Image (cartoon, rainbow, N blue to C red; front, top):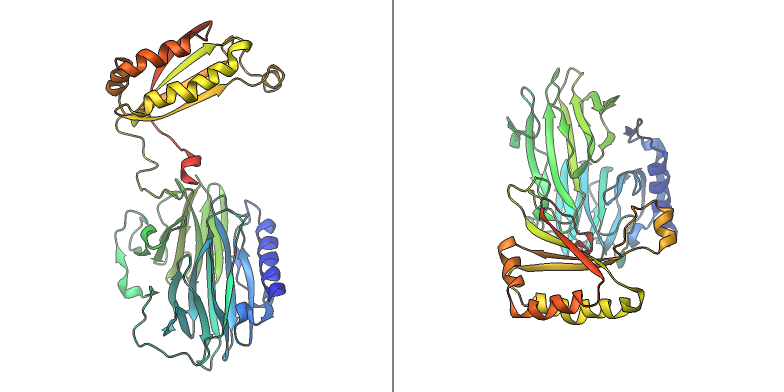
Length: 408
């Protein structure tokens, strides 16, 4: 089993590094499939390949796998601590299990597997099943699995699935979406970000009529992976252009402009997976703040070497405790200048100031209340008495991105 997982991850990595920025269309070609036995301690043998790997996108896509599961074979029940998956049944039928509940799912269909949910697949249909599997990790490039040793062969079936699933039904699509503009384009957002706890942003089903091109879509704060369910056409990513056909996968990266054209005679049907560049998936995260989000005061100090230790201790023992009790206080930082040789190496601007304290309040009004407080009358003299000179300047916070907070 370990050899199977290692091979799966190795193939994924090789596929990801093989793709250049101008050649991003990957064909789902069964002749490239590798055969594995007892995947996640499942029944029989199956075939698969990696289409897109963890290093292709800058976001946390871990893989896009594709494969076939013949009758009387499957993927054993297992779960993940750090990744979420979504299985796509392109063609066929399978007994799908999530957290011990098993139902028959007929393709084309989607089954998301949330982090920590035990899941498995068994094909008892008598026909080969064609599938995809998208994986998103909490930490870029890192995956995990825990096998339960359960093939799910002979599991009791429930007529109504007791887990999240969706069908790719064209009758559920609607026209005139602002997300996919173009005459007659049909669209449905099957899953939004609330379904997942990782950086999944959306799962969309899109149909583009013959002769129609989508309006340019700028990928702001997200990357997208596209899979051609049916039809043929052309993609334009910035200045690159490539043809696409059924069972091709392709992708758009952060900041790129993507246009998709249907150059064939039949509908071009797409599955679109969006991955946010942050776990904070607030839809307003990328919009300029209509008013300042907060304020920051930067205070520069010249501190003699013999006072450096006392100055740093003052910040943690006096200054910070004095601010944390203030209305509207958000955060603060003490910054120490690089050593002189390192500052020269990076060609930093020459400065006589060697320390900076940054304090942030929700409003300038509340910062001024802090300045007028009894605590400030203790903290400010404690700081200035250890400095030769000092100055300050204020800023309005127009945007922020604190990765340290996001990792907590």
